[in-house]
Amino acid sequence: MDEAAEIIARVADRIDNNGWSICPCGEEHGQSEAGQRVPDVMRDDAELIRKSRAKSAPP
Picture 1 (cartoon, helix red, strand yellow):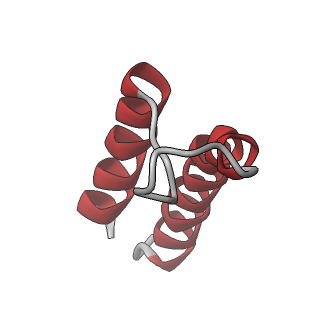
Picture 2: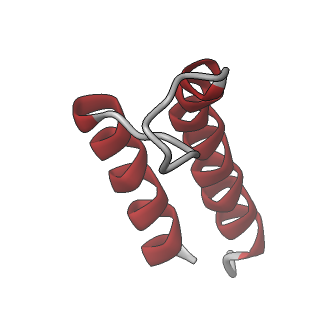
């Protein structure tokens, strides 16, 4: 789970630094707004994984 969280966080960083589009057509039709939100959602998911992992770790 730790590895998955790390990969998700790295992908979010890459999107922040290099951009990303959900549509390969090259025309703007709202995908940039969605693309701007993706890194934050991915970071939230990575944090959820980390918290779940911490709760399931043996004492």
